[in-house]
Image (cartoon, rainbow, N blue to C red; front, top):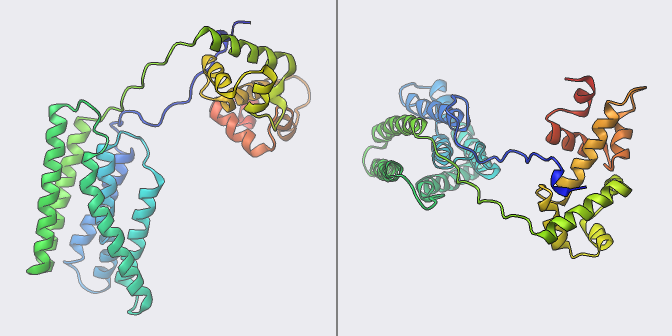
Length: 317
């Protein structure tokens, strides 16, 4: 059997061009940031409980502005978890610093808010210098330069407000930030970022193709994928090759790694069992028969491979 004949479609990579949709990463974060800036400005117009409620959310504007900046200069469809955690802390502690009664809890929240807010502001100015690649278009270079200069100007206005009359200057700074944010988002919508093109894949050597063929023969003859404790070291010992050479043989078959290959064969067997005529076999037993230790990993691996759950696949959904 020729190893190159094994069909496999790699999973979609997360880093693709920014989609021009209103509710993608950039759109959602821009809406939240806009709402926070508007709340910050309105908190200085109203009085009493309404002003406090608006201020409790408005003080998180610097954090949401940072997330928008990340989306402006990072082509990934989804942000990392840690920035969202930082902004979550900033939002919660900012609200507590406004709403909590005076005391230790409010003091701690104020200190955490000041720390996370300072970090967000610093990271905002750093973001345009990240992920530059080797060949930015002239328009992109100008956009990034304008962003840094504009941000530095707004930061200067805010610092000036500390020395003069904070309230009106900070309100003007927030309004200008809102306008600048909208302009930046509109520009990015018209000039979406493109993820770097992946490096061309190296052609498999004859040795790697031969090892891949031996691995396929072992899978066909002994169904080793049904062993839930199967490890690449075990298979390498069976084939009498070093692990790194076996990994290259797996790549020659079109799989990212050994686990992807094994799970592919397990899912193929599960698909056959799910559609077999006769009484429906329990999904847990199918998972165990195919080499999964429990039904949870089986469901996740099956959906990653096919796009649907085992139950939906059986039902023909």
